[in-house]
Length: 172
Image 1: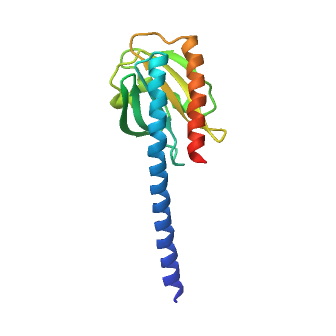
Image 2 (image 1 turned 60 degrees about the vertical axis):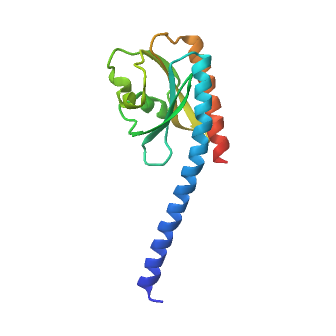
Image 3 (image 1 turned 90 degrees about the vertical axis):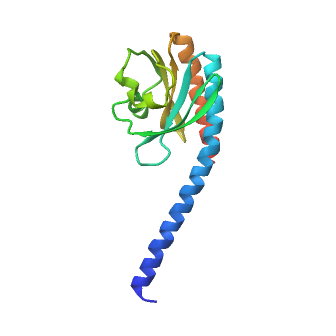
């Protein structure tokens, strides 16, 4: 075989294997997201909050993906990808801990999420989500009317741990 033919074959084989790996990861991610959705739906009932979501790094491209949004009524799929820069998720990815914030109407803090939210939140709690000891994203718990205080932050931090364990279980 000519060296160019072998090289061409190797490149095509590598591309095929990458495609198969990506397909497998996406299939596993869909199952993982359904479990996360159920946990976020439970959080909406327990805290209570109007909506909850996770923004996760599903690939090493530095982009965060929001696979869906939960409310007390259920989980709806969403397809949102964004760069974390300029968002509160950047703080979490940088090693920050969970925190709460009050939002103004049209607040830029969560503007990137507006397209997937059905509410206009005025209160948010954000907590990191980890996998393998590394922060891979965050969970956002959003409330339109009810303020979210210290008790809800404590519960959200526990939720972050549960979400992290769920992600870890699906990775192994």
